[in-house]
Length: 212
Image (cartoon, rainbow, N blue to C red; front, side):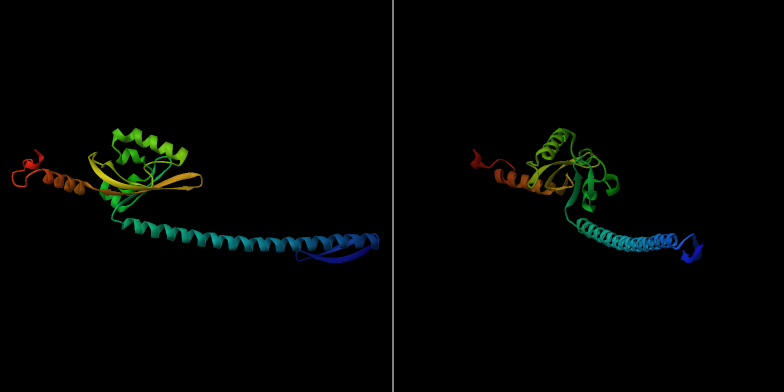
């Protein structure tokens, strides 16, 4: 028999064959197997390196997004106006510190809740739902991109006048809305007083003679 010693996985083995031709064939198979194993090992090493690099990039990108989100949230929390975020289902996605002060709901209690149930008087619920549905279907709405005045509702169910401006963005096939809200109670009272003084005597509070 023809004998040949080989090393495989750190151990020595003996290949025995009846003739040199068969021995050469077995040695060829062995060398091909070793080469394939070496290529497989190198490929696995490269894949591990790529995975490590990808993980590092994902972690870095995630950290950047988190930092960006925190930066935006810090800006919103120092804004003088209330800011509210809402998704296509009408659920609250953002609620800054001034929104907490204005409406009486904490951020934790507001997030994930129906916006209409929190701040919109019941009499306007149907109009809100209709307008939201129309915008999602058509991308058009009179309330988006405009500064409007309407009535809002606090946690204690009291109502007050507000001014709000709404923006909408589309992401991943879904609309997201952001609104800055301002309490205009004092402005409305001031306007009412100015209108009254324009038509009435300041001392007697009776209608001016010019009106007769």
